[in-house]
Amino acid sequence: MISLRNLTKRYGDKTVVGDLCVEIAPGKVTGFLGPNGAGKSTTMRMILGLDRPTAGQALIDGHRYAELRHPLRRVGALLDAKAVHPGRTPRSHLKAMARSNGIPVRRVAEVLEQVGLTEVADRRSGKFSLGMGQRLGIAGALLGDPHILMFDEPVNGLDPDGVRWIRDLMRSLAAEGRTVFVSSHLMSEMQATADQLVVIGRGRLIADAPVAEVIERSSLTAVRVRTPQPAELEGRLLAAGMRVERPGGEELLVTGGTLERVGAAAHEAGVQLHELSPRAASLEEAYMELTASAVEYAAPVPGADDKAGV
Ligand SMILES: Nc1ncnc2c1ncn2[C@@H]1O[C@H](COP(=O)(O)OP(=O)(O)OP(=O)(O)O)[C@@H](O)[C@H]1O
Image (cartoon, rainbow, N blue to C red; front, side, top):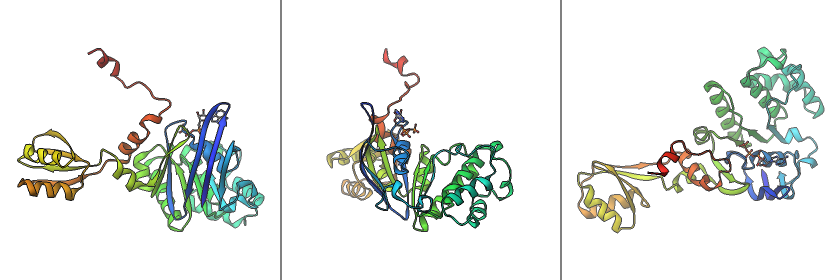
């Protein structure tokens, strides 16, 4: 369990992380999302004792990182895959880590196997591809067999095979009852991997909810209906307080109502239906909506200027 209690970090008069209160529970993959500069890495660094909170606390099973006797056995992290000296081999790097943390050296061969680096275990890591570097970083995180794992952008630069491998790894770590906390900008990946989401913007908590709930709450989650009598049905739905869009033809997109309510309204109006189906927002759509006002480094929308004068 990771507990953030009023966690705050200020640089000068800029609040980079502000009063975060979150519990990151075991047995789940918790996705950590937020626009560039939202404070995700700073939060992770504070959990790992690499940055000092200005106020509040980040606790690992109730203790500050600095208080842990063998930290790598409690929490494993991949923050920066480039953190390995290029002259070192995966085996020598992991052995040194194991020795300085009281971890049995036999774990080195086990984690090398687990991440698929056994064959290159004795090559210098300086020539490694980005994906191999990520795998080595993950081997380091797994070395102490910790109950808590944190990954900052683990799929960055990986090919589809690597992305899938990381997804399966995170799911299996959570299934073993571990706490898995992972930041990412890839929404489709998070939708496929995470159970729970913590979303921050400008250092503040925006959402802490199951993935399904974040999607459900999106105004873009709708009911799709097709009927040969769209005008009649639209009138009935509007009267019942739902919102209706008419993309054209027989189709209606209804928000603010459930499948059951839309079906009942059609039945009461004596309207024939050709389709009644849920249209779930994607996590990307729900996320964009949630963070719309918290984007710090927004680029102008291409073409937006041209329209301004029209
Ligand atoms: N040492 C520092 N001194 C001053 N400002 C800092 C320092 N470290 C981070 N910041 C600022 O804190 C803010 C949050 O940065 P952080 O790297 O935590 O965001 P992030 O959510 O991880 O972003 P990204 O998704 O781009 O990696 C940024 O505005 C950054 O410029």
